[in-house]
Image (cartoon, rainbow over the protein chains, first blue to last red):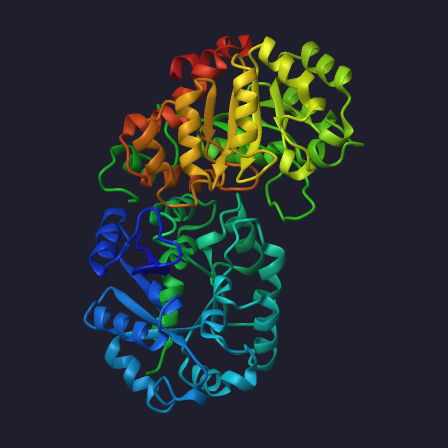
Length: 250
Length: 279
């Protein structure tokens, strides 16, 4: 069973260093190999602490030639012209092995309203670019709901950073929006996968680790021995994330 | 695969459970909880999970026992009576609705049900060392019982409060649920100072590196496995222990051996031939 991690990071975190840091791409690769993780969507921690433009570029420099890593760039409003123009963005992403975006209204200090990021949202829909939402980065579920109500076809991958069982929070999003996915990094409820799959199928769950803050292997074992079919396990472990990546048009 | 350096990890990966490495879960709950959706919260559903991981026994205190004192602990006692080889209970110490004589009498009269007490001071807003708790600590100390306390970075049940108890009551076993979450260095200090303190791993195992740190500083003999079942997946917890840096012998200590050493004080555990054979 191959695993494609939808939520891995590395880099230097000046605010809160992980107990076992993964500062470099080599550190990340070594741990992926030890755990048996084949592919990962990756971010650099500096994207959420330091300069967004610089950190996006650092990430691109690291992974543009890595076949097993797919980058996620942090977005800023285009009004300040700090990132590439939306029309130039797809080609730039293709050259740098970037396959997703994330929103950072907290550290980026911008308002999370559709009129602020409308051009990015429209491009995301046009090109099937997934948007990775992490609630630690200043995105509230209320703001996300407002965006999705206006752009219901957006592909969104939610990392809800609370290990308390939270199905009451995210199941309504899954029911309402057809391209809404759940990263399992913090979803470790006993029987949670089985219960979710019974209601909504396996197509909306993605293996995620939260590395380096969490171990790769914990959620791997949880998925491997979930009481669901082998096909469902494969979808969660890698199939759904592979499908999302294949659908991106850059 | 989880961990290419661990044979135990590879065996768990292949089978999901091992007959020669059972699990003892020292931190469980049961039943309905207002704030969360729990798909497998009945005794039968919890046993299904336990069977899938070869968890032999879960020590628990039901949500209703802790949060709905008017319901009390009837359901916990019924669950243990129905499944005496799979569940034992911590009697709740519901700080704001204590019935000292009744609670202690209940524990005294039901040694096959209760292993000791459960404290949840952060939730009730009163400290571990509050005078009204004294009879419970004294009884546990006199009878060498287990006391599971929620412990966090808190003025109510953090390291400073726990140390007051550990100084006064050396004969009870103080199980620090969540290992003084966030106060990892202080947890190590206390383990080194007090031989009756054990660290329990619920809500620790989602933080990569903490268990590695504990093993490096204090070894594996004073660490107990726990999941908050029916909250957190047992396989998730097993996977984290298998991922952390330690030997497979350390992992067997955490999963079973340390707990078995503590439970041998109870006649029901000694009488359980299946458990003895697997120790």
